[in-house]
Structure formats: structure tokens, C-alpha cells
Amino acid sequence: MSPSDRGGNNFDLLRFAFSLGVFLVHAQVLSAAALEIFPRFIAVDMMVRAFYVVSGYLVFMSYDKSRSLKDFVEKRARRILPAYFTVITLLAVFGAFLTTLPLSQYLSLATLKYYLANLAFLNFLAPELPGVFEGNRFAAINGALWTLKVEVMFYVSVPLIAWAFTRLGRPAVLGILYLASVAWYLAFEHLFVASGRMIYFTLAQQLPGALAYFISGAALYYYGDRLGRMLPWAAAASAIFLQFNLGWAGTALQPMALGLLVIYLAVGFPYLGNFGKYGDLSYGLYIVHFPIIQTLVSLGIFARDPYLGLGLALLFGTAAAFASWHLVEKPFLRRSSHYVVANTAG
Image 1 (cartoon, helix red, strand yellow):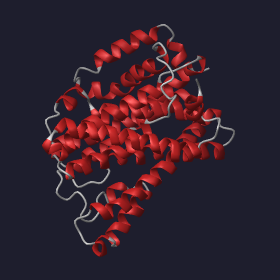
Image 2: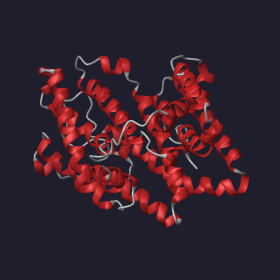
Image 3: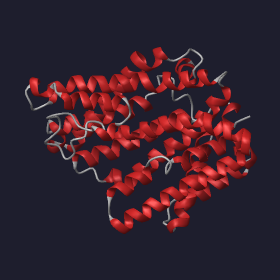
Image 4: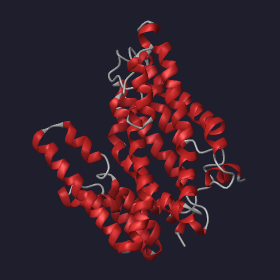
């Protein structure tokens, strides 16, 4: 039995905290406003990697609880696709009002390419819309969506990994995948440092470089019980460890250290209440915050008053996430889904 089966857990709260952390850092990076406090105290790459850990834990749990492969695929599709497709479509439509080009020029092959590439999770092929946000520091429409491609590949990998469990054994498969992922990341990190070419940095962040975090979450789902009373101490040691730059050895151990810390906060730390009572806003906030910030930047709000821009971005982002949950996400989920149950629980 997994630790989260024993009662309440803090996964909903953590996911929202991670989304909010990404939002705050992007607000500073995109606006170049006097909000340096956020990148100084929030490591956005750690927020994203923490998401991967949570996914590893919960998605393998979902797979184990699914009646069939079809059931698993349907659950994952219901959770991620409706809101994602809605956001991509709405951004393509609203781009017509934001573009500096005539509508006849906006309705072009470039816009169609953006729409189709982003629907297919190939955001890197067409990150921009014609004439939209061209005066901003960055012209990307929704730069946060690159992680969704990685998430989808995680989902696809789960049945294959589970099949490998039956052939080689679960510990061996988890260990091999963890080490292979770390080796990939270290190799491309070395190439990036040696050459300065961003393509190597990008490849390091993608699958399989990110897989070690997903695997850490999976390992803690399967074997977290064995830590028992040691889990709080392991989490405390991990928190200290993550503060130091220990070269390649630190990089190799970081996924498991982060995993121990995140999963302890989720299932070992005292239950902090039903954070999903009013809806799971974490996914919605994550996929809408970037274009909202970009729009406010283009309107000059951040330039006039950084904290007004931040407040408006948070207000509009939360409202959009709330609407996404109640109008798009929740209607597509089964009544037995954890997200729906948490939302309806007293």
C-alpha cells in the first residue's frame, strides 16, 4: 500500500505551489521588471522537476489502479487534453486581437503552423504567432508548454516500463532508467559547458534527461513505505544537500534527493487540509499564466508598475484557472477521479 493511501495528502497543495513558483519567476523574466526577489529565492527549474517527481508517483499509482491499458490512457487523456486544446485554440483566436498585423496577414500559414504544432505538443516548431508580442522581451506565446511534451512522453513510457518490470524486475528497471537518464543529462551538460551551444542545454532538459525525476517519484511510490521513520530524516538531509553544488555527483543524486523531499512533504508531512476543495487550479494556472503575463507586458502595465502588473496577472491567471477547472477540466473527468472527489469533499 502506498503512503498516500493511508489518508489525506498534500499533493494538491504542492502542485499549486509549484505552479505559483513558476508563475512568479516568469513574471520577472518576461517583464524584466523590478521583481528580482522571485528568481533569487525560487528556482524555476526545481519547480518543474518537482512536478516530474509528483507525476512519477501519481501516474504509476494511476497505472496500477487502472483496469486496463485503455482505462489508463483514457484517464490521462481526460486530465490533460481538454484544457490544453482549449488554451491552444483560444490563444490562436485571441492572437487576432493582439497582433500588430492586418487580420488578412495574421490568418496565414504561420498561424496554422502554430496551431497544429502546438496541438501536437511540438511547441518548439512554432512558439510564436505573427505580429503578437513582437515588442516584448520574448515573443513566445506560451513558453511554459514545453514541459507538457515531456509529461506526455512520461505517460507513454509508463506501460513500457511496467512491461519491463515483468521481464527484468522492478528494482533493476528503475535503477537502469535512473542511471541512463543521469548519464544523458551529464553528457549534454558537459557538451553545453564545453561549446556554449544552447541545443545541448535544451537536449539535457528533455527526455530522457528529465526521466530520473519521474523515476524517483515512481521508486518512492513503490518503496517509500520501507523508509518508515527514516523518511523525515532523509527529507531533511535532502533539503540540505540540494543547497550545495557538488559537481557531477550532486547532479547525479539530485533527482532522488528532490524526490525524497517532495514526497515527504506530500505524504509524510502532516496533512494540511483539502486544498482541492474549490478545484484543482494548478494545471490551469500553469498553462494560462505565460500568455497572460505576456499580454500585460505588451500593454505596458509592468513597465508602469511592476506590482500592479504582478497583481493583475495573478488575478487574471487565477480566474482563468478557476474557469478552466469548472468549465473544461472537471466536466471531462470521471466522477471517481481524485480531482473531482477532492473538489466535492467537505
